Image 1 (tube, rainbow, N blue to C red):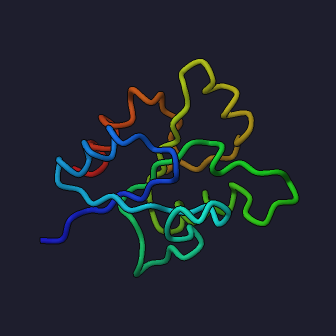
Image 2 (image 1 turned 180 degrees about the vertical axis):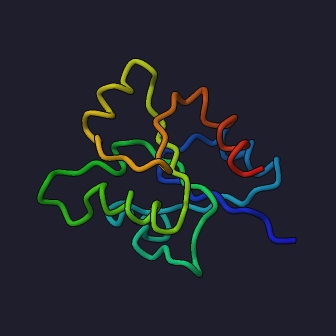
Length: 124
Protein backbone atom coordinates (compact mmCIF):
# COMPACT_ATOMS: atom_id res chain seq x y z
CA UNK A 1 0.00 0.00 0.00
CA UNK A 2 1.33 3.42 -0.96
CA UNK A 3 1.59 5.94 1.83
CA UNK A 4 0.23 9.43 1.24
CA UNK A 5 2.83 12.18 1.12
CA UNK A 6 2.93 15.60 2.70
CA UNK A 7 5.24 18.21 1.23
CA UNK A 8 6.38 20.84 3.68
CA UNK A 9 8.23 24.08 3.29
CA UNK A 10 11.11 25.02 5.58
CA UNK A 11 10.05 26.03 9.07
CA UNK A 12 7.25 23.49 9.50
CA UNK A 13 7.47 22.29 13.08
CA UNK A 14 9.08 18.98 13.97
CA UNK A 15 6.13 18.14 16.24
CA UNK A 16 3.71 18.42 13.32
CA UNK A 17 5.96 16.39 11.03
CA UNK A 18 6.51 13.70 13.66
CA UNK A 19 2.76 13.49 14.25
CA UNK A 20 2.17 12.97 10.53
CA UNK A 21 4.88 10.30 10.26
CA UNK A 22 3.49 8.45 13.30
CA UNK A 23 0.03 8.57 11.72
CA UNK A 24 1.38 6.75 8.66
CA UNK A 25 2.15 9.56 6.21
CA UNK A 26 5.43 10.39 4.50
CA UNK A 27 6.80 13.93 4.89
CA UNK A 28 9.07 15.40 2.24
CA UNK A 29 10.72 18.84 2.09
CA UNK A 30 9.69 21.30 -0.63
CA UNK A 31 11.70 24.31 -1.75
CA UNK A 32 10.44 27.68 -2.89
CA UNK A 33 13.42 27.76 -5.24
CA UNK A 34 15.47 30.07 -3.06
CA UNK A 35 16.05 28.14 0.14
CA UNK A 36 16.89 24.80 -1.57
CA UNK A 37 15.14 23.04 1.30
CA UNK A 38 13.93 20.15 -0.84
CA UNK A 39 12.30 19.42 -4.18
CA UNK A 40 11.55 22.66 -6.02
CA UNK A 41 7.82 23.37 -5.97
CA UNK A 42 7.95 24.01 -9.74
CA UNK A 43 8.79 20.34 -10.32
CA UNK A 44 5.39 19.19 -9.07
CA UNK A 45 3.43 17.58 -11.87
CA UNK A 46 0.75 14.93 -12.39
CA UNK A 47 3.25 12.08 -11.90
CA UNK A 48 5.24 13.66 -9.09
CA UNK A 49 2.96 15.39 -6.67
CA UNK A 50 2.03 15.44 -3.01
CA UNK A 51 -1.28 14.68 -1.34
CA UNK A 52 -0.93 17.83 0.80
CA UNK A 53 1.38 20.84 1.12
CA UNK A 54 2.05 22.81 4.30
CA UNK A 55 3.74 26.22 4.36
CA UNK A 56 4.03 29.58 6.04
CA UNK A 57 3.00 32.63 3.98
CA UNK A 58 6.53 34.06 4.06
CA UNK A 59 7.73 31.02 2.08
CA UNK A 60 5.30 31.84 -0.74
CA UNK A 61 4.90 35.60 -0.71
CA UNK A 62 7.67 37.48 -2.52
CA UNK A 63 8.31 40.93 -3.95
CA UNK A 64 6.39 41.70 -7.15
CA UNK A 65 9.49 41.36 -9.35
CA UNK A 66 10.51 38.02 -7.87
CA UNK A 67 10.85 34.93 -10.06
CA UNK A 68 8.23 32.80 -8.25
CA UNK A 69 5.10 34.70 -7.27
CA UNK A 70 2.72 33.01 -4.84
CA UNK A 71 0.11 32.88 -7.61
CA UNK A 72 2.25 30.32 -9.43
CA UNK A 73 2.29 28.05 -6.38
CA UNK A 74 -1.47 28.50 -5.99
CA UNK A 75 -1.87 27.57 -9.67
CA UNK A 76 0.17 24.39 -9.18
CA UNK A 77 -2.01 23.40 -6.21
CA UNK A 78 -5.23 24.13 -8.07
CA UNK A 79 -4.12 22.39 -11.28
CA UNK A 80 -3.12 19.17 -9.51
CA UNK A 81 -5.75 19.28 -6.77
CA UNK A 82 -3.23 19.56 -3.94
CA UNK A 83 -4.57 21.12 -0.74
CA UNK A 84 -2.24 23.80 0.65
CA UNK A 85 -2.44 24.62 4.34
CA UNK A 86 -0.90 27.98 5.22
CA UNK A 87 0.08 28.38 8.86
CA UNK A 88 -1.04 31.82 9.98
CA UNK A 89 -1.63 32.86 13.60
CA UNK A 90 -5.30 33.65 14.12
CA UNK A 91 -4.70 37.38 14.68
CA UNK A 92 -2.87 37.64 11.31
CA UNK A 93 -5.30 35.71 9.08
CA UNK A 94 -7.04 38.82 7.78
CA UNK A 95 -3.71 40.43 6.89
CA UNK A 96 -2.54 37.24 5.16
CA UNK A 97 -5.75 37.16 3.11
CA UNK A 98 -5.09 40.75 2.05
CA UNK A 99 -1.57 39.82 0.90
CA UNK A 100 -2.88 36.84 -1.07
CA UNK A 101 -6.50 37.70 -1.90
CA UNK A 102 -6.86 35.38 -4.87
CA UNK A 103 -6.35 32.07 -3.08
CA UNK A 104 -8.19 29.18 -4.77
CA UNK A 105 -10.41 26.80 -2.81
CA UNK A 106 -7.53 24.34 -2.27
CA UNK A 107 -5.68 26.92 -0.14
CA UNK A 108 -6.62 27.34 3.53
CA UNK A 109 -5.30 29.88 6.03
CA UNK A 110 -5.19 28.13 9.41
CA UNK A 111 -3.86 28.87 12.86
CA UNK A 112 -0.94 26.54 13.68
CA UNK A 113 -3.15 24.85 16.32
CA UNK A 114 -5.57 23.82 13.53
CA UNK A 115 -3.07 22.41 11.04
CA UNK A 116 -2.68 18.83 12.30
CA UNK A 117 -6.40 18.20 12.65
CA UNK A 118 -7.13 19.61 9.17
CA UNK A 119 -4.22 17.69 7.64
CA UNK A 120 -5.55 14.44 9.10
CA UNK A 121 -9.02 15.18 7.70
CA UNK A 122 -7.64 15.86 4.23
CA UNK A 123 -5.41 12.79 4.25
CA UNK A 124 -8.10 10.40 5.54
